[in-house]
Length: 226
Length: 243
Image (cartoon, rainbow over all chains, first blue to last red; front, top):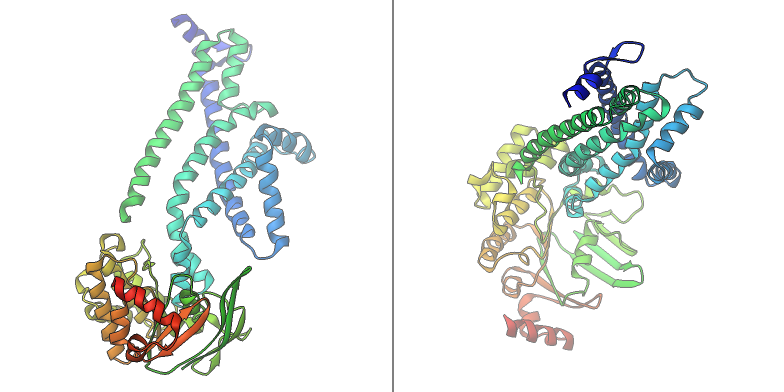
């Protein structure tokens, strides 16, 4: 056991002399960078898509619905591979950027659904009350609907972040070295299976658990005015 | 003040209002009574265009609000509405609920709006609740805040959509007292209600609706004591016996 840990994590692996644990930490960095920026991109796309979907004009709604439909209907790993090897192949885009774009596009579709559901969960009586006071549609959205919708949206957005973090484990498909891929490299070079894989799993678990913990604290604070 | 001519409303195949013409004068208090599904609430909601009439004209203070280019938001600033389920904004305090519209619409400065709000809260007997959130109020208190919120816009006309139907019986009196007070001050009011005693005491006129029509429209004493139409008689004999 000690030997296995030593071999796979604290000794040079392969000819480049890389230490296993450093490879894993670099992979973790990639995982976090991709997750974070994909989430940001997803939030922007998600907000834009939501507003497009609420438009009264079909030619604005249509592309938004198509986007969400296609993304939700295909596996993220397929989207990632198509984006990197086909769509972006002519442009000299590095793997991390490609992964951010792919996961951002993916996340945007889900986030738009989260925002839409959050807005729709606010009782339509609230709109009527605001409009009956003479507030415009935009004012009603801004002062009445969105502040209430945000309480529905934020917890679901936290979940989306966790899902996204785990989904980035397929970055290896385009040759990017994330946390999962780092574990795989160690496994293939040292022929130690358990230590690198469980190390990866524990790190994922630690990240999602701590994030869930922070989120639940935050949710409690949001509920205070209820 | 309000002139309604041949008002129709369809929800799909459901013909809810079948040609209503009414004239409501400045300062008049009109109660609308009738069985469930008779179109009372739809009629009321058409007056501030929460429901778009399918056909017919509504004129308020000389303005044809059913015209295609009518400014609906401006109209609604002058027409207060009180809902059955209060519809307070749960994420805002009582004070914020009341001052939101006058400030957002730049009709008052925040300082003016707050003075006005405190005055209104005193009128409805809730001066101590200015900083409370709606969730901590009883139904009757919520409804009185909702009335204060509508009054903060200084409306010329107030619409009440079954304002006491969602309240516990012991809360009804407080809300009715506030409305009575408002009627005495000369506010033009249209009230959809099941409170027959209140309709009788406070209204200048009572409208009985059934099946999408106005069946009878008379001063309260005449309507309650000597209903002319058979359907009015049947309805009243049921609700008055129950009450």
